[in-house]
View 1: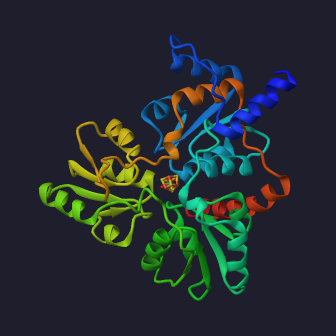
View 2 (view 1 turned 90 degrees about the vertical axis):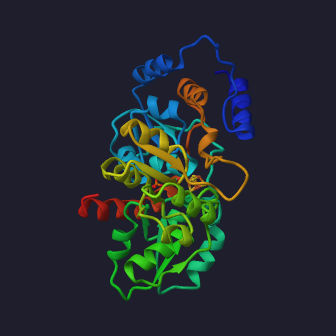
Length: 336
Ligand code: 13P
Ligand code: SF4
């Protein structure tokens, strides 16, 4: 690219989040993406909330922990991260020699945004005798202010790796934090953040649905609010929900998490029925607007032009890596 074109491309990415280049409508994007994977020695990592086509073209589909573990270990030259910004950023922190690209740089996360580093730094300073455990759904700035990161798959194990009397700050998800407090008998100090997708489920509508489907199991992500978790038959991370729905003998499941996961649930157990838990609004979908910014077209474009790329200041990366490394160590010891 000439310097002028490069500046124009950078401006477009800043404004739109992706390079808005016309794509020949006759192109078979699946085979073009496969070709690019081989040409560029690229790996596509996709979160379970991505749209079905992206899940189908990915080399690995999983939850935040699985994705971080894959990103750390991959020998590919380019990591195409089909997820949200904090996930791609985590991949770069863990494996900095790789080029990490994301289909849409503006794929953010309401939970991550609920915890700005300058404010959190002050909060931490107000509680110097507390260790900080942060949910992976946070920025590199928060990871750098954290002692250990956790995901919903390993939060209990991470918290229990500290003595019972250790004072702990848990950020940024108050719902996950409250659930872990209940599970472990701790009294962690919770940051007041939440996920916009998991807070919209309607207790009343779910209860009515359970009456209509008495044999259905309600499965919920721990980012849901306490009244939903209280009536859930199973609570777990996205991968844990997927495994439960495969292994449990029930034939119907009410799924209280982002609806993208249902594609994988149906693929792995086609004879079962998966009902998205109804939200408390007039819309019938539980889509995360951030996750759903990624499309197959944008996956193709980011692979072809190798942009938008995740870049980060080295001192921030090194500081943020400490809390992620600690999480990966504790998880490996626990066999996760
Ligand atoms: P897990 O995939 O780790 O369960 O996290 C869910 C989530 O909200 C990701 O944004
Ligand atoms: Fe963030 Fe919630 Fe979307 Fe996950 S589902 S990326 S926590 S806003």
